Length: 332
Length: 204
Length: 64
Image (cartoon, rainbow over all chains, first blue to last red; front, side, top):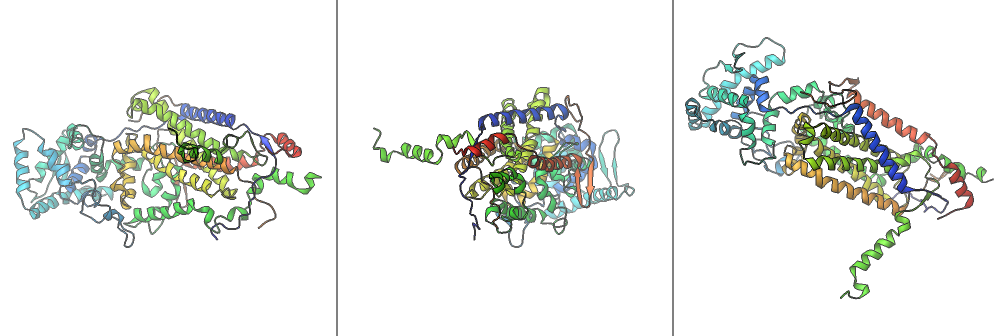
């Protein structure tokens, strides 16, 4: 049953001279030439990476809002769960919690790693030092209340901007210094901390701090990347380049270059329900693609799929010369 | 001392290899007369594209991952590498279409199909690790997006697309070794079994 | 800043997106996929050189 009806006999017929080595050399020459021609015609894209410094200068309110959520533990990374922390269970498919089961392998404490840690490296700032001491000494409930009070006007500002409504006056940006002011009460030392963090970011110091916090030599950009991904700058650039998931983005390249057309089936599922609006879209799509990949490998053993080529006889076109030669008329 | 011939591993391996693939089967100078279509060119075209990818990739690796961002010649080789990848997937998928519609797994050739399918499936993460190693905006975006899919199935716990060092290692060494090994197995199996004969007409 | 060196055609501008029902693809990807289908069809349709040599081999009953 697995093998199906396969009566393919070894070929006992004629052979033609065929130079495989010459064919391979010609193929390499042709492919190399095609690649060179395409290079000369179109080159390749190289959009410069965003930095935390650029983010803090171009979108200061978004930066401060994101930093506030990192501090109060409500950001995307803070609530992500494994492999970064235990603050969420991650995605699941029915009872399968692979994300949770594989555990936290790259721990990130967003408040410590993105805010308090970097601020502690800032020298000669007594006001900041005192604000940090006050924050660290406060009970968790108080820290949370300060964070929420500070974040509320920022969230309202972001919502208004997204909906195209007039921005509330509680959040302002100084046009000269780029500093953000948030009008709110009950925020404790948080405004001082956020202002200092924004300064640190604008100077480029936060980029370096996030990268070299563990050791001098670094090749792991997880921390700064996750921080930026929690904010709006990467999203903004991606939207401009049609790289978003809701528009088949994983198939696309920046600019007008061809991208990864081979990811069409993977991108497809995200465009339809129930995946489009599911919180577990990623795991569901990955599992479907896993099953389909196994099926792809197993085509020779799947009834129906392995029989389709006989039902839609494209093979008759491919081997037409052979069939003509083998027909009784041709041997007459 | 060499030991007796019957217990020599070297002789056993050599004789098995020659039995499976005698020289005239490994590098035949003829092909069945039914090999008579341009569709047959897409297999060797895939290998050819892979050669261009590896050559251009080797040049990029010689100068390190930052080189292509600040020199014209580096950017030139990066472009060749990128277009060779596009060409590789192009010809490999057309090759796959051809082989499917020919039912090329017939006559005991299931392993040829299997190694080919796995090659495609391994080529996809090989390309992904390249995309996230570019050290530009594209790499930032792709890595911060791809991490969600991989984390959701627990793979992110040991394969971190935002870890440039790890991704570069996979891309430059580990995955190319896997692709070349799979392609070699695939081609040797084709040489062993021969190119699949045409489907017989008049049968169901 | 977008840096593209020496290309004859500058593709460093946001893509033109082709919309068809729920499918949204940049033009470059549509062209690639289209060319693949064309290549497949043309590869099958075009006659392959060496027909005379193959016919001679069949007549000669050559089996190497």
